[in-house]
Image (cartoon, rainbow, N blue to C red; front, top):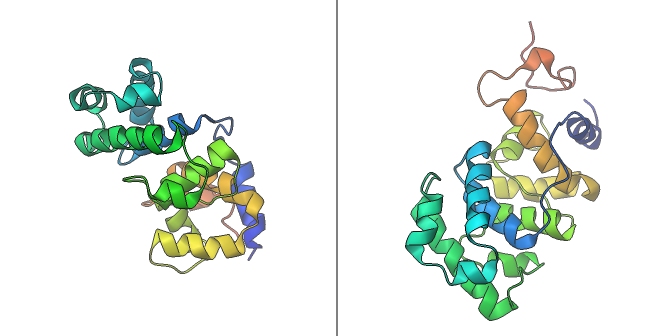
Length: 205
């Protein structure tokens, strides 16, 4: 089997994900919250409308709940997300002078912000090595035999010990693309996979 870091590099190199992503910490934070239980196209559409209506954290903090809900209505769990986004914005204004904190501990104190969201913000906005583990990363890491874990939290803990820090951020984004196009949850395209010869779970004819 190939070295785990070699496999990670191959996944990253074969991804067509646009790594020139949004950098603004507040935008990244809100988009990541909106993305929960959403398809990418819905997230992008809703986020664009949201930031056309609300220009900055101050405007969001003063927004009426119904206003935010009207924008997020096509998004899953829109009522819960709307309340959290307003609450987070108020905390950022009151506690952090309107800025998103750049530490994992402080991000995790924000309502509704878990490790995945916090790590996405740290890597995308602050260029801090951070490994965001979503369902794709958790599933594919186990399928490839990198880890044998039951939860995303345990997967993150294991992967940070196995992967080079330079891969922590990119591997999340690359695996999302890989997991949607080739290493799908059901009916993975093993025959056309670039890791088929080294994957212990590959189903080949």
